[in-house]
Amino acid sequence: MKVGILGGGQLGRMLLQEAANYPVTVHVMEKDPTCPASKLCHQFIVGDITNYDDVINFGKDLDAITIEIENVNIEALFELEKKGCKVYPTPTALSIIKNKIQQKEFYKKHSIPSPAFHIVNDREALKEHAAFLPAVNKLAMGGYDGKGVQILKEAKELDLGFDAPSILEKMITIEKELAIIVAIANDGTTAIYPPVEMVFDQRLNLLDYQICPANIDNKTLWKAEAIAITVARNLESAGIFAVEMFTDKEGNVLVNETAPRVHNSGHHTIEAHYSSQFDMLWRIIMDYPLGNTNKIMSSVMINLLGEDGYSGKTYYEGLNEVLSIPNAFVHLYGKEESKSGRKMGHATILSDDKQELLHQANKIKHTLKVKGEKK
Ligand SMILES: Nc1ncnc2c1ncn2[C@@H]1O[C@H](COP(=O)(O)OP(=O)(O)O)[C@@H](O)[C@H]1O
Ligand SMILES: [Mg+2]
Image (cartoon, rainbow, N blue to C red; front, side, top):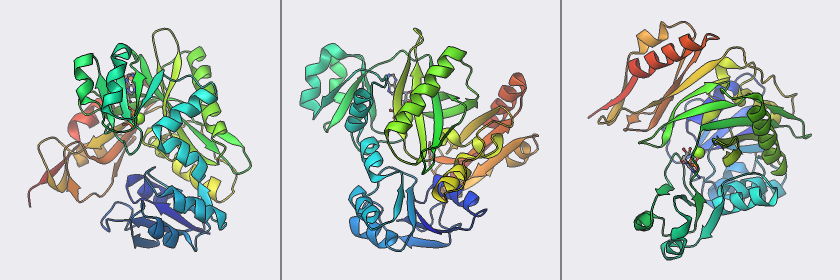
């Protein structure tokens, strides 16, 4: 089989690591030839994944195509799908997710619990909703990793809102942030991974560390699982879906957002689960049976972000020390330039002893540093 990945970041790179196990030739397209996935694929094409012609040319001889980022040219994917190329997720599912307005309307249509919201067209329109604050303003298109999300606590902050189509979402007093990954095969068979619980870096609005399984009661678990499956099924597409959710003090589970692709919240599945999210996507694309989503051990995953105040040629500190920890696994994405807050790698630590797990996770966080030096 010949399969293409749009985007050459770390998700593409980790997909390629698993692809090596299967009879598949993988092509990657991305603008930057030094991107993390470029050295691991069979064929690298320099091109713009948001450009119609580039995506058509890339996909015209492929059996299937998948994405590692939502910001791709959907019109081209519709056209390729028409010509018989299988697209994961379907362009229809992708177009619902890609636009936060459509995504929120999708939840509403399918009675999927999600924070209340208004649709706004520009900053002027935003100002009519002072009474709705505190709220979170989210760009309809193009946001990622906290870019495109603005917290608006009170009316005088409305100027900070986006001057573009966006949603204004009720601010939730979050108890926990959970994510569940759902796999859907071409024949509709589903498999679900255990929920992870995410702890965020408040300042950067980026995932700090994540523990699996989440520390939640059974009732919350069942709600979260039912919601995640409902979201994924109603998108009517095969693929991998990561459903991010909030719980609040009242025991409600609300959907925050969904990614129709492999996701940061599934990195731990590489070592901690029998079949990883990356392995699973190849099984789906190649029409093999779905893998086993059970955990082998409990885990914590830590994103390795470029250290503050260091930008330039990437170097690592503490690698030897962390690699000497039993059951610690390090993934470096091979990005040549480190910048503060940039996702440069991740580490996963496995243990069924909760104290040990958190202790080692903390140690990793404080030992392993990714920095950049001026050239
Ligand atoms: N309605 C909300 N109430 C409170 N916090 C929110 C809300 N929506 C988002 N957040 C916070 O902002 C973070 C980023 O928002 P999200 O919509 O997931 O955007 P991104 O695309 O950057 O991941 C969330 O993980 C959560 O911590
Ligand atoms: Mg998010």
